[in-house]
Length: 343
Image (cartoon, rainbow, N blue to C red):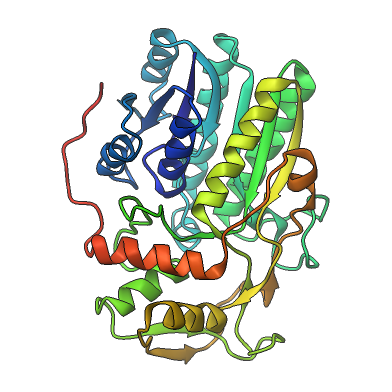
């Protein structure tokens, strides 16, 4: 029996594949490579010295998705696949609703048809909206402020409805905070297309000379240094959270949502200074006006995940910076282009 990983070639998906394989699971990866590179999966194989099936399939391709379930004995699904850029979602909301929601509907239809009723869903802290009190608990009011967050929130509701209709399902919803860092090998990491949307790859690309300076949006927030505070979590800690979530859905029925964060707020300048201290490099930056919709402070209360999943983030901000820079240094232009190999 195997674990199906949708979007397994992506940043979080590829790191989770490593942890799954190292934990002894057999995996199958389904990805359309629209926002990822198949090279990441070749490197997962190298890191773990294990092989696995790869399907170049889009979740909107119903017949091909069903083929994956017909050709394999799937025990559970880790669902990462989806468009994920907040700013882009504002520009092309129809694409986001079509891809993320319809794709998930197809996946759930095929799971139900083939009696695969175990799923871990990749959600986001964006479902809490911009005004949640910190630290954010899972029972905080929900309310997304952009189409990307709305798709996550709608899928969460969909999963709740699926469970209410059939309580034999096992469902875990994981709400990520701000994943950064890379695998300690430096072989897999975050590989944004074009100018990075996220802070850490922006910092590492400035350090590598790919951009002249870092743009920091806002220095008049009510925080200790005026810059926005977020909960940065090492991507490998995030990946191990999925292993714990998988163990929970495999062991029983029910539905639950869990924050995956460190519970510690780090400001933009804190992260910049930590990166400088770890690497010995100087990061040039400029302060710009706040971006609409950005909150001053956002960090998790991870107590529920610790108590119910037995999971806790263990890597510190120095590890995150060191590993992110190792990835950038070893892969100055990200993954090289390769042909997709489906086996």
